[in-house]
Image (cartoon, rainbow, N blue to C red; front, side, top):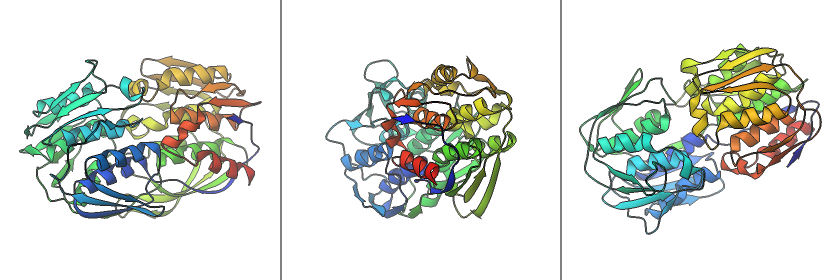
Length: 425
Protein backbone atom coordinates (compact mmCIF):
# COMPACT_ATOMS: atom_id res chain seq x y z
CA UNK A 1 0.00 0.00 0.00
CA UNK A 2 1.26 3.48 -0.94
CA UNK A 3 0.99 6.63 1.18
CA UNK A 4 1.62 10.33 0.67
CA UNK A 5 2.18 13.24 3.02
CA UNK A 6 -1.05 14.87 4.23
CA UNK A 7 -1.61 18.54 5.04
CA UNK A 8 -3.99 18.26 7.97
CA UNK A 9 -6.26 15.80 9.80
CA UNK A 10 -9.62 16.69 11.27
CA UNK A 11 -12.70 14.88 12.52
CA UNK A 12 -13.60 12.19 14.99
CA UNK A 13 -12.98 8.47 15.10
CA UNK A 14 -14.38 5.63 17.18
CA UNK A 15 -11.70 3.05 17.90
CA UNK A 16 -12.53 -0.69 17.76
CA UNK A 17 -12.85 -2.62 21.01
CA UNK A 18 -9.83 -3.30 23.18
CA UNK A 19 -8.01 -6.44 22.07
CA UNK A 20 -6.90 -7.49 25.57
CA UNK A 21 -10.41 -7.15 26.99
CA UNK A 22 -12.05 -8.85 24.00
CA UNK A 23 -9.80 -11.91 24.39
CA UNK A 24 -10.55 -12.17 28.09
CA UNK A 25 -14.29 -11.70 27.63
CA UNK A 26 -14.40 -14.84 25.46
CA UNK A 27 -12.18 -16.87 27.79
CA UNK A 28 -13.85 -15.91 31.05
CA UNK A 29 -17.32 -16.10 29.54
CA UNK A 30 -16.58 -19.65 28.38
CA UNK A 31 -15.55 -20.64 31.92
CA UNK A 32 -18.66 -19.06 33.44
CA UNK A 33 -22.11 -20.45 34.01
CA UNK A 34 -24.78 -18.81 31.90
CA UNK A 35 -24.50 -16.38 29.02
CA UNK A 36 -22.00 -13.55 28.63
CA UNK A 37 -23.00 -10.73 26.28
CA UNK A 38 -20.18 -8.66 24.78
CA UNK A 39 -20.70 -5.44 22.82
CA UNK A 40 -18.01 -3.57 20.84
CA UNK A 41 -16.04 -6.83 20.60
CA UNK A 42 -12.93 -6.50 18.45
CA UNK A 43 -13.55 -8.43 15.23
CA UNK A 44 -9.83 -8.72 14.52
CA UNK A 45 -8.00 -11.88 13.51
CA UNK A 46 -6.42 -12.42 16.93
CA UNK A 47 -9.70 -12.30 18.83
CA UNK A 48 -11.40 -14.49 16.24
CA UNK A 49 -8.67 -17.08 16.94
CA UNK A 50 -9.78 -17.07 20.58
CA UNK A 51 -13.41 -17.62 19.59
CA UNK A 52 -12.40 -20.47 17.30
CA UNK A 53 -10.36 -22.18 20.02
CA UNK A 54 -13.22 -22.20 22.53
CA UNK A 55 -15.71 -23.35 19.92
CA UNK A 56 -13.41 -26.32 19.29
CA UNK A 57 -13.66 -27.08 23.01
CA UNK A 58 -17.44 -27.23 22.93
CA UNK A 59 -18.45 -23.66 23.77
CA UNK A 60 -21.34 -22.18 21.79
CA UNK A 61 -20.47 -18.63 20.74
CA UNK A 62 -22.82 -16.52 18.63
CA UNK A 63 -21.05 -13.77 16.71
CA UNK A 64 -23.40 -11.13 15.31
CA UNK A 65 -22.68 -7.63 13.95
CA UNK A 66 -23.91 -6.02 17.20
CA UNK A 67 -22.61 -8.35 19.89
CA UNK A 68 -21.30 -11.77 20.73
CA UNK A 69 -23.04 -14.20 23.05
CA UNK A 70 -20.93 -16.78 24.88
CA UNK A 71 -22.88 -19.67 26.38
CA UNK A 72 -20.50 -20.72 29.13
CA UNK A 73 -20.32 -24.19 30.66
CA UNK A 74 -18.50 -23.43 33.90
CA UNK A 75 -14.93 -24.08 34.99
CA UNK A 76 -15.12 -27.79 34.16
CA UNK A 77 -17.25 -27.62 31.02
CA UNK A 78 -14.58 -27.60 28.33
CA UNK A 79 -14.28 -30.65 26.07
CA UNK A 80 -11.17 -32.12 24.50
CA UNK A 81 -10.67 -30.49 21.08
CA UNK A 82 -10.87 -32.86 18.14
CA UNK A 83 -7.99 -31.12 16.37
CA UNK A 84 -5.01 -28.87 17.03
CA UNK A 85 -5.91 -25.43 18.41
CA UNK A 86 -4.56 -22.82 15.99
CA UNK A 87 -3.71 -19.55 17.73
CA UNK A 88 -2.97 -17.72 14.48
CA UNK A 89 -0.84 -14.68 15.33
CA UNK A 90 -2.15 -14.32 18.88
CA UNK A 91 0.39 -14.48 21.69
CA UNK A 92 -2.32 -13.51 24.16
CA UNK A 93 -4.48 -16.48 23.20
CA UNK A 94 -1.52 -18.87 23.27
CA UNK A 95 -0.25 -17.90 26.70
CA UNK A 96 -3.55 -17.36 28.52
CA UNK A 97 -5.26 -20.47 27.19
CA UNK A 98 -2.23 -22.51 28.29
CA UNK A 99 -3.03 -21.63 31.90
CA UNK A 100 -6.61 -22.82 31.43
CA UNK A 101 -5.64 -26.02 29.63
CA UNK A 102 -3.09 -26.97 32.30
CA UNK A 103 -5.97 -27.66 34.70
CA UNK A 104 -8.21 -29.68 32.36
CA UNK A 105 -8.65 -33.45 32.18
CA UNK A 106 -7.54 -33.82 28.55
CA UNK A 107 -4.53 -33.28 26.32
CA UNK A 108 -4.42 -30.54 23.72
CA UNK A 109 -1.92 -29.12 21.26
CA UNK A 110 -1.53 -25.41 20.49
CA UNK A 111 0.12 -24.04 17.38
CA UNK A 112 0.17 -20.76 15.49
CA UNK A 113 1.66 -18.93 12.55
CA UNK A 114 5.39 -18.54 11.86
CA UNK A 115 5.61 -15.58 14.24
CA UNK A 116 3.99 -17.44 17.14
CA UNK A 117 6.32 -20.39 16.58
CA UNK A 118 9.29 -18.09 17.26
CA UNK A 119 7.97 -16.33 20.36
CA UNK A 120 9.25 -17.40 23.81
CA UNK A 121 6.98 -19.73 25.77
CA UNK A 122 9.43 -20.77 28.51
CA UNK A 123 8.07 -17.83 30.51
CA UNK A 124 4.73 -19.65 30.92
CA UNK A 125 6.01 -23.21 30.75
CA UNK A 126 8.14 -22.67 33.86
CA UNK A 127 5.44 -21.49 36.31
CA UNK A 128 2.79 -23.88 34.97
CA UNK A 129 5.22 -26.78 35.43
CA UNK A 130 5.93 -25.58 38.98
CA UNK A 131 2.18 -25.87 39.62
CA UNK A 132 2.19 -29.50 38.43
CA UNK A 133 1.22 -28.77 34.84
CA UNK A 134 2.45 -30.96 32.02
CA UNK A 135 3.41 -28.62 29.19
CA UNK A 136 6.06 -29.27 26.59
CA UNK A 137 7.37 -27.65 23.45
CA UNK A 138 6.76 -30.16 20.65
CA UNK A 139 9.96 -29.13 18.85
CA UNK A 140 11.99 -28.81 22.05
CA UNK A 141 12.81 -25.12 21.48
CA UNK A 142 10.59 -23.55 24.17
CA UNK A 143 8.25 -22.23 21.47
CA UNK A 144 4.94 -23.37 20.00
CA UNK A 145 3.62 -25.87 19.10
CA UNK A 146 2.88 -26.72 22.73
CA UNK A 147 1.43 -29.99 24.01
CA UNK A 148 -0.49 -29.56 27.26
CA UNK A 149 -1.74 -32.53 29.27
CA UNK A 150 -4.19 -31.59 31.98
CA UNK A 151 -3.09 -32.51 35.48
CA UNK A 152 -3.90 -31.80 39.15
CA UNK A 153 -2.41 -28.40 39.99
CA UNK A 154 -1.26 -26.86 43.26
CA UNK A 155 -0.99 -23.21 44.13
CA UNK A 156 2.37 -21.44 44.17
CA UNK A 157 3.78 -17.99 44.82
CA UNK A 158 5.44 -17.14 41.53
CA UNK A 159 7.92 -14.28 41.24
CA UNK A 160 7.83 -13.40 37.55
CA UNK A 161 11.09 -12.33 35.93
CA UNK A 162 9.24 -10.09 33.46
CA UNK A 163 6.41 -7.62 33.87
CA UNK A 164 4.03 -9.46 31.55
CA UNK A 165 0.26 -9.53 31.79
CA UNK A 166 0.29 -12.71 29.71
CA UNK A 167 2.52 -14.56 32.16
CA UNK A 168 0.60 -13.25 35.16
CA UNK A 169 -2.73 -14.18 33.57
CA UNK A 170 -1.63 -17.70 32.61
CA UNK A 171 -0.66 -18.40 36.23
CA UNK A 172 -3.82 -16.84 37.69
CA UNK A 173 -6.03 -18.81 35.29
CA UNK A 174 -4.25 -22.03 36.23
CA UNK A 175 -4.87 -20.97 39.82
CA UNK A 176 -8.61 -21.33 39.21
CA UNK A 177 -7.97 -25.10 39.06
CA UNK A 178 -5.22 -25.38 41.69
CA UNK A 179 -5.26 -26.78 45.20
CA UNK A 180 -4.72 -23.79 47.49
CA UNK A 181 -4.03 -20.15 46.77
CA UNK A 182 -1.90 -18.92 43.88
CA UNK A 183 0.07 -15.68 43.98
CA UNK A 184 1.98 -13.83 41.26
CA UNK A 185 4.43 -11.03 42.02
CA UNK A 186 5.82 -8.93 39.16
CA UNK A 187 8.92 -6.72 39.03
CA UNK A 188 6.69 -3.91 37.73
CA UNK A 189 2.91 -3.88 37.53
CA UNK A 190 1.66 -4.94 34.08
CA UNK A 191 -1.80 -4.34 32.65
CA UNK A 192 -4.48 -5.57 35.05
CA UNK A 193 -7.47 -6.46 32.86
CA UNK A 194 -7.38 -10.08 34.05
CA UNK A 195 -7.66 -9.05 37.70
CA UNK A 196 -10.49 -6.57 37.06
CA UNK A 197 -12.46 -8.93 34.84
CA UNK A 198 -12.02 -12.14 36.85
CA UNK A 199 -13.32 -10.31 39.93
CA UNK A 200 -16.28 -9.06 37.87
CA UNK A 201 -17.08 -12.64 36.82
CA UNK A 202 -16.96 -13.78 40.46
CA UNK A 203 -13.42 -14.99 41.14
CA UNK A 204 -11.92 -14.63 44.62
CA UNK A 205 -8.98 -12.49 43.54
CA UNK A 206 -7.16 -9.77 45.45
CA UNK A 207 -4.44 -7.38 44.28
CA UNK A 208 -1.98 -5.52 46.45
CA UNK A 209 0.86 -3.60 44.87
CA UNK A 210 2.67 -5.84 42.41
CA UNK A 211 1.12 -9.08 43.74
CA UNK A 212 -2.15 -10.72 42.69
CA UNK A 213 -3.67 -13.59 44.70
CA UNK A 214 -6.41 -15.97 43.56
CA UNK A 215 -8.28 -18.80 45.29
CA UNK A 216 -9.49 -21.87 43.35
CA UNK A 217 -12.86 -23.18 42.23
CA UNK A 218 -15.04 -20.07 42.19
CA UNK A 219 -18.44 -20.10 40.54
CA UNK A 220 -18.01 -17.71 37.66
CA UNK A 221 -21.23 -16.19 36.32
CA UNK A 222 -21.95 -14.82 32.85
CA UNK A 223 -21.85 -11.03 32.58
CA UNK A 224 -22.52 -8.14 30.23
CA UNK A 225 -19.40 -6.43 28.94
CA UNK A 226 -19.15 -3.28 26.82
CA UNK A 227 -15.58 -3.27 25.54
CA UNK A 228 -13.95 0.19 25.51
CA UNK A 229 -11.92 1.39 22.55
CA UNK A 230 -8.36 0.08 22.46
CA UNK A 231 -5.82 2.70 23.55
CA UNK A 232 -3.15 0.78 21.63
CA UNK A 233 -5.13 1.41 18.43
CA UNK A 234 -5.93 4.99 19.47
CA UNK A 235 -2.18 5.63 19.77
CA UNK A 236 -1.79 5.94 15.99
CA UNK A 237 -4.36 8.72 15.82
CA UNK A 238 -2.89 10.37 18.92
CA UNK A 239 0.48 10.46 17.16
CA UNK A 240 -0.98 11.59 13.84
CA UNK A 241 -2.98 14.37 15.47
CA UNK A 242 0.08 15.65 17.31
CA UNK A 243 2.42 15.48 14.30
CA UNK A 244 0.38 16.68 11.30
CA UNK A 245 0.18 20.51 11.26
CA UNK A 246 -3.25 22.03 11.89
CA UNK A 247 -4.77 18.74 13.02
CA UNK A 248 -7.55 18.30 15.56
CA UNK A 249 -8.92 14.79 16.15
CA UNK A 250 -11.53 13.60 18.64
CA UNK A 251 -11.02 9.92 19.52
CA UNK A 252 -14.17 8.48 21.12
CA UNK A 253 -14.61 6.10 24.06
CA UNK A 254 -11.00 5.05 24.65
CA UNK A 255 -9.97 2.86 27.57
CA UNK A 256 -7.68 4.80 29.90
CA UNK A 257 -6.82 2.09 32.43
CA UNK A 258 -3.82 3.39 34.46
CA UNK A 259 -1.84 0.25 33.59
CA UNK A 260 -2.25 1.12 29.88
CA UNK A 261 -2.14 4.93 29.72
CA UNK A 262 1.61 5.42 29.35
CA UNK A 263 1.12 6.75 25.81
CA UNK A 264 -0.93 9.64 27.21
CA UNK A 265 1.62 10.45 29.89
CA UNK A 266 4.54 10.33 27.47
CA UNK A 267 2.76 12.37 24.78
CA UNK A 268 1.94 15.08 27.31
CA UNK A 269 5.49 15.09 28.69
CA UNK A 270 6.75 15.58 25.12
CA UNK A 271 4.53 18.67 24.86
CA UNK A 272 1.46 17.13 23.26
CA UNK A 273 -1.99 18.72 23.58
CA UNK A 274 -4.36 15.94 24.69
CA UNK A 275 -7.56 16.75 26.58
CA UNK A 276 -9.68 14.05 28.25
CA UNK A 277 -13.43 14.59 27.87
CA UNK A 278 -16.48 12.66 29.11
CA UNK A 279 -14.46 10.58 31.57
CA UNK A 280 -16.22 7.51 32.99
CA UNK A 281 -14.66 5.54 35.83
CA UNK A 282 -17.26 2.78 36.23
CA UNK A 283 -15.41 -0.51 35.68
CA UNK A 284 -12.72 -0.03 33.05
CA UNK A 285 -12.20 3.77 32.86
CA UNK A 286 -12.86 5.48 29.53
CA UNK A 287 -12.69 8.95 28.01
CA UNK A 288 -12.87 10.81 24.72
CA UNK A 289 -9.46 12.18 23.69
CA UNK A 290 -9.17 15.57 21.96
CA UNK A 291 -5.78 15.72 20.24
CA UNK A 292 -4.34 18.87 18.65
CA UNK A 293 -1.17 19.43 16.65
CA UNK A 294 1.75 20.22 18.94
CA UNK A 295 5.47 20.89 18.78
CA UNK A 296 7.09 17.95 20.58
CA UNK A 297 10.44 17.64 22.33
CA UNK A 298 12.55 14.62 23.23
CA UNK A 299 12.39 12.93 26.64
CA UNK A 300 13.72 9.83 28.40
CA UNK A 301 11.29 6.89 28.70
CA UNK A 302 12.31 4.14 31.13
CA UNK A 303 11.43 2.17 34.23
CA UNK A 304 7.94 1.44 35.52
CA UNK A 305 6.17 3.25 32.67
CA UNK A 306 7.46 0.79 30.04
CA UNK A 307 4.88 -2.00 30.64
CA UNK A 308 2.09 0.61 30.33
CA UNK A 309 3.11 1.48 26.75
CA UNK A 310 5.12 -1.48 25.45
CA UNK A 311 2.82 -1.95 22.43
CA UNK A 312 2.82 1.79 21.69
CA UNK A 313 6.61 2.18 21.58
CA UNK A 314 6.84 1.78 17.78
CA UNK A 315 4.58 4.77 17.18
CA UNK A 316 6.27 6.66 20.03
CA UNK A 317 9.44 6.17 17.95
CA UNK A 318 7.71 8.05 15.13
CA UNK A 319 6.77 10.86 17.51
CA UNK A 320 10.37 11.00 18.76
CA UNK A 321 11.73 11.15 15.22
CA UNK A 322 9.63 14.27 14.62
CA UNK A 323 10.35 15.86 18.01
CA UNK A 324 13.09 18.39 18.68
CA UNK A 325 15.98 16.99 20.67
CA UNK A 326 16.86 13.49 21.84
CA UNK A 327 14.55 10.74 23.05
CA UNK A 328 16.07 7.81 24.94
CA UNK A 329 14.07 4.60 25.48
CA UNK A 330 15.37 2.08 28.01
CA UNK A 331 14.15 -1.09 29.77
CA UNK A 332 12.23 -2.19 26.67
CA UNK A 333 14.07 -5.40 25.70
CA UNK A 334 10.63 -7.04 25.44
CA UNK A 335 10.33 -5.30 22.05
CA UNK A 336 12.73 -7.90 20.64
CA UNK A 337 10.29 -10.79 21.19
CA UNK A 338 7.07 -9.28 19.85
CA UNK A 339 5.61 -10.14 16.43
CA UNK A 340 8.91 -8.86 15.05
CA UNK A 341 12.10 -7.58 16.65
CA UNK A 342 10.66 -4.11 16.96
CA UNK A 343 13.96 -2.52 17.95
CA UNK A 344 15.71 -3.73 14.80
CA UNK A 345 12.77 -3.01 12.50
CA UNK A 346 12.16 0.51 13.79
CA UNK A 347 15.87 1.34 13.53
CA UNK A 348 16.07 -0.07 9.99
CA UNK A 349 13.17 1.86 8.51
CA UNK A 350 13.38 5.10 10.48
CA UNK A 351 17.03 5.27 9.38
CA UNK A 352 15.88 4.77 5.80
CA UNK A 353 13.50 7.71 6.28
CA UNK A 354 16.38 9.95 7.36
CA UNK A 355 16.07 9.71 11.14
CA UNK A 356 19.17 9.58 13.35
CA UNK A 357 18.30 6.50 15.44
CA UNK A 358 20.48 3.91 17.17
CA UNK A 359 19.28 0.63 18.64
CA UNK A 360 20.47 -0.59 22.04
CA UNK A 361 20.05 -3.87 23.91
CA UNK A 362 16.89 -2.60 25.59
CA UNK A 363 15.63 0.27 23.47
CA UNK A 364 16.79 3.05 21.20
CA UNK A 365 18.25 6.56 21.08
CA UNK A 366 16.53 8.93 18.68
CA UNK A 367 17.89 12.35 17.71
CA UNK A 368 14.75 13.93 16.31
CA UNK A 369 13.82 16.97 14.30
CA UNK A 370 15.19 16.06 10.86
CA UNK A 371 12.66 15.93 7.99
CA UNK A 372 11.52 12.41 7.15
CA UNK A 373 11.44 11.13 3.58
CA UNK A 374 9.32 8.37 2.11
CA UNK A 375 10.74 4.89 1.72
CA UNK A 376 9.67 1.28 1.27
CA UNK A 377 8.81 -0.50 4.53
CA UNK A 378 8.31 -4.23 5.06
CA UNK A 379 5.82 -4.73 7.89
CA UNK A 380 7.46 -8.04 8.84
CA UNK A 381 3.83 -9.17 9.29
CA UNK A 382 3.68 -7.01 12.42
CA UNK A 383 0.49 -4.96 12.67
CA UNK A 384 2.06 -2.32 14.90
CA UNK A 385 4.96 -1.77 12.50
CA UNK A 386 2.53 -1.30 9.60
CA UNK A 387 0.36 1.23 11.44
CA UNK A 388 3.33 3.12 12.90
CA UNK A 389 4.90 3.72 9.49
CA UNK A 390 1.51 4.67 8.06
CA UNK A 391 1.61 7.51 10.60
CA UNK A 392 5.20 8.37 9.63
CA UNK A 393 4.14 8.58 5.98
CA UNK A 394 1.72 11.41 6.81
CA UNK A 395 4.64 13.75 7.59
CA UNK A 396 7.30 12.31 5.24
CA UNK A 397 8.24 13.95 1.94
CA UNK A 398 7.48 11.78 -1.05
CA UNK A 399 5.87 8.37 -1.25
CA UNK A 400 5.97 5.66 1.40
CA UNK A 401 5.17 2.06 0.47
CA UNK A 402 4.27 -0.48 3.15
CA UNK A 403 4.53 -4.14 2.15
CA UNK A 404 2.25 -6.53 4.02
CA UNK A 405 -0.02 -3.72 5.17
CA UNK A 406 -3.07 -6.00 5.36
CA UNK A 407 -1.62 -7.40 8.61
CA UNK A 408 -3.48 -4.56 10.38
CA UNK A 409 -6.56 -6.83 10.36
CA UNK A 410 -5.03 -8.54 13.39
CA UNK A 411 -6.04 -5.64 15.64
CA UNK A 412 -7.73 -2.90 13.56
CA UNK A 413 -9.45 -4.12 10.38
CA UNK A 414 -10.73 -0.63 9.42
CA UNK A 415 -7.54 1.28 10.20
CA UNK A 416 -6.69 2.52 6.72
CA UNK A 417 -10.28 3.56 6.02
CA UNK A 418 -10.40 5.61 9.23
CA UNK A 419 -7.01 7.14 8.45
CA UNK A 420 -8.05 8.12 4.92
CA UNK A 421 -11.31 9.65 6.15
CA UNK A 422 -9.57 11.88 8.68
CA UNK A 423 -7.02 12.98 6.08
CA UNK A 424 -9.83 13.89 3.66
CA UNK A 425 -11.81 16.05 6.09
